[in-house]
Image (tube, rainbow, N blue to C red; front, side):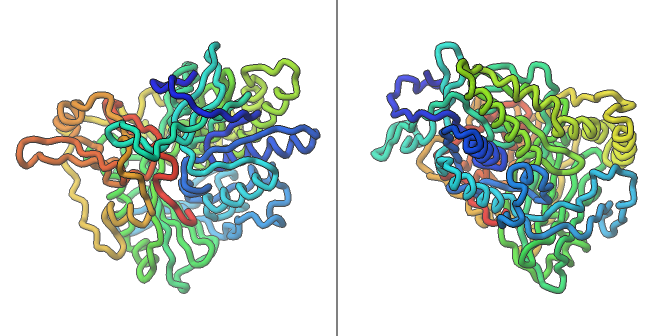
Length: 560
């Protein structure tokens, strides 16, 4: 049966050993590992991978300075195979910014694993495109443009697959002439690899109470632009991270600048979503950051190529939920394996995917295959991934409690000591305690922030940025940003929080209109959505639920 009101709809069904939801680094790594193990044991394991983007890589957004350790577990000879990790890190800077100046704080104490040497600057989207080629060569069936909208369960409430490929439902709910009810893709095991705040992953986490013994998950929003700069300003392999301006000490976050490829620079900004001020706009903080003299000088004369935004898991070790349930598992950022101080997660996403794939292969080899992949859960607990996350588990809570300035110093020392003591921390394990939505405070406690107008040269407005993300949705379809209660935005969020959706959304999806005539209402411009998931996280009343639109919609990121 389907976990939906549409359970009575008859659909064609396709049967597989494994169905994977999501074509990012975790989903693709799991698919590849399954086929590699099948070949090694002489078995046939059928694998289908479903991706909601128009192509593999279309929805992938990351910095990215990539730790190749995950890739090396899949393909030890990845360099010879031509994997698109072509720019090794050559210089690694950590800067504290003031409004006009900057101070190099690279000398602050930190353990060796914080160094980016040995890592590569690359487009994670292009790496995923390459991984998809390897997966298809091994026999994985990949279906892009197929959004998964429902989870399928059997009579024992075990996951048995998903529904994907529903098209042709009009905005008012009626079926258009091109209506397609979708397909049931059924599997012995279903792996959810949707990335941070995956919509179906959230459903199974709630259904099976996978987070009952873990801390609340925390997030940041990462905004990124890809620039092509003048050759004389380009320093291949240069990596820079900053703290400080334009954020205040109570608001966590920072920037990144990565030089790679053909005179490209990835310039980005991360804001931790536990910020308190409802007037804060992460997008506008990013645009303001680029006006810093040090950044503006690098970008002037260059060309902005693309823009995008995506949330990042920041909860860490104590926020990882239980990974397994009857019929499936969570892998990659669907569970949340980002190392916050390293600002890296793709290597851990790939490693957990490999662990899950190995557990699936083991289970399929048994005459009475277990419904729950306990061997994956156990493998994670004893893995390098868990060990890595445990070493840095207190960094995020320390920053939250002590602020950016003091918190950075304390967390640096804490990481050094915890590393030397083999994972034992003088703080024990600190907890996050409350969600990002509940971190927001009433607007009456703050003054509105007057952001500078974009100059159209270095800083830009939201709509021009959405345009270069190549975002597109079929307009005549149900709005995929669901309000649990349509009255809350005007009755509660507007008077109490100045309706923060207008500002936390980096794509201009949410607008308050009609306020000038005394009839305010929330307008949702769903066609602008870049699938960042911020609204699903930061709405102070948890009133917005992000669900998948028709497959193929959303951004189409090049080289991101």
